[in-house]
Length: 492
Image (tube, rainbow, N blue to C red; front, side, top):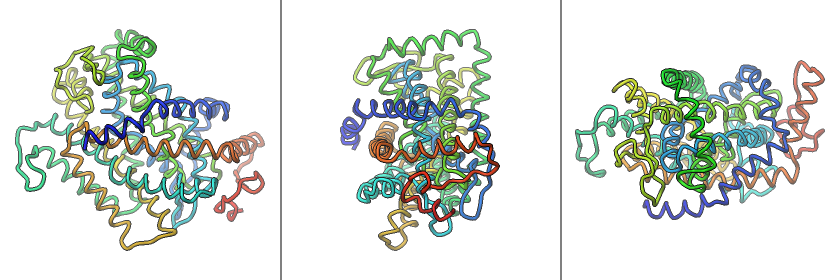
């Protein structure tokens, strides 16, 4: 299995995808006149504007749902993997892909809002919807929907639960082994972690999107603030080393110890995995939001990329590098830097847990295990919502019995299985899912841009209304020459 998935990843995550992720971000940054910088104040204002309705969730709830997808294992184990395989310079390239990716996030999330629909009393939208309506290619939309159901319903959840299980085992010990009939010998800590996650996750996902939104709007801000505060504490007690660490990151970005391809490749790969800009996941939550104008939610989603990578991922990177709790071991090469035992798993939370353990003792490992549980748990909730939205898209044309129930059971099975498989297999399968979605979504939003520029037209319209000082924003797609935006057309 691992050999097959690794071979497929070699094709999917070629230099072409890394180039298109960076290139699309730069292109959309220029096309929007660097909206991620110009509209920063407006992003902050919009975070707390608007309210939820019977059909949709508030902009802040949509931000929380999308952040629950963005802020996850990638922020703890993913950053560790980027440093371990690509060297400290990979962190710089994560920053670059986040800054440029914020413009991509604006484009895709605004498209999600423009082409959303009302389905069984709630808003639905995402790449499948805007591919069908803006491109007129239903086969492409179906292909994306099926790929996303596979990725978010089966491949990606296991990465999150695997990290929870590994962190639990490292924090509480994995000496006790349980013999199971179908899975063979499994550490008791992993078995308990898997069973507990499946039970709690099942209770929430059977409650629907509103329950997901209400849960994440409380948990996501709390866990992110707590985690960043812990990182700031570690940086503060090692403040004299901070300039040298920043210098190490920047210098290694351009003269990388792990090689240029490794630093950029792992920085971009883990950057896209973490902030999800261009992957096509963010537009699903963006479409569910109740807003006056599509550009508003696009701006809120652009800000979420900053929170994910520039804040949370940077917190992890600084904790690891400032405490020296890392090895650099490029794939297929010998260890270049060894500060930890050679058998320390790179694709796991181990670097982060050992970094905190060096400052806080065993409590540090437990803190990371708890933080990772909340990070990863809310990400699995977001994955479920995204997969459900794409099932709902397919259900518009083709219905089969109990499709949503089957999706829930499939995801819960993936989550439990993910707790017991190896980290390398889990990450490889997750990378495959992310890569396939990114190829399809970035290609679609680029084609849509050249055909009609709907997201750019929405941005200009929003800026004109702001300049005019309107008290209530409106959006008229027909006036802007945007076709098939039926929800907004009927709203007029």
